[in-house]
Image 1 (cartoon, rainbow, N blue to C red):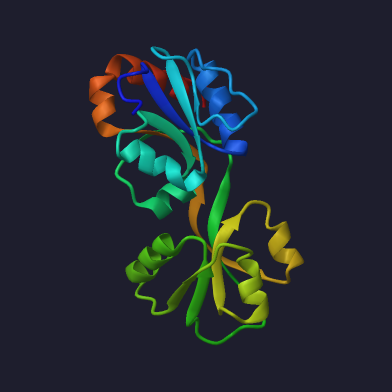
Image 2: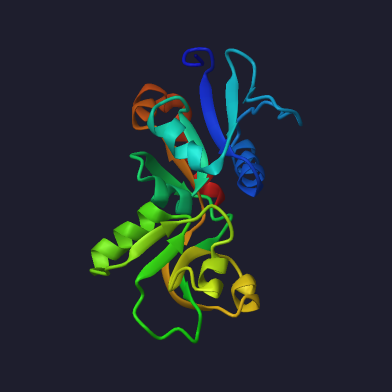
Length: 206
């Protein structure tokens, strides 16, 4: 158990958002522990700030359930998770979009949609009154549209280069995404002397 052992516990996702999030938090004045290039799961000294280096999809869970007081995660991951966390700051890094993508020669109704974001896609479909099967994939989502496994896909798009290279077309942007600071709602009350100044400084940076 790590509750009570550290003044603040932060959850950061592995990869690009880790670097951007770490840098933003450091610029906001936090004395962050140095992250070792090994398999250490918790970085930090007891009594100070701890960093949990997690998979993207796990960050909202750790923050929502209070294992971490706050974290940094992409809005796309947050939308998929459906977790109840406070989202006070858009860090404006890792900018991308969640889009509906299809082969330009496909003209029939969309009956199957492949995606790594099944919860988000299902919510969008329900809100719009669409009726289609949602196929959850872990690998290359675009391949589902190219091979005919699905009539369309919902995936993250940054520049659109990979879509064009696959011969696909971006039909519609369903949501915009960037890295966000998320905070556990109870921690915001219990550790307000640490978290509220952090939120203020991060807002001033963007």
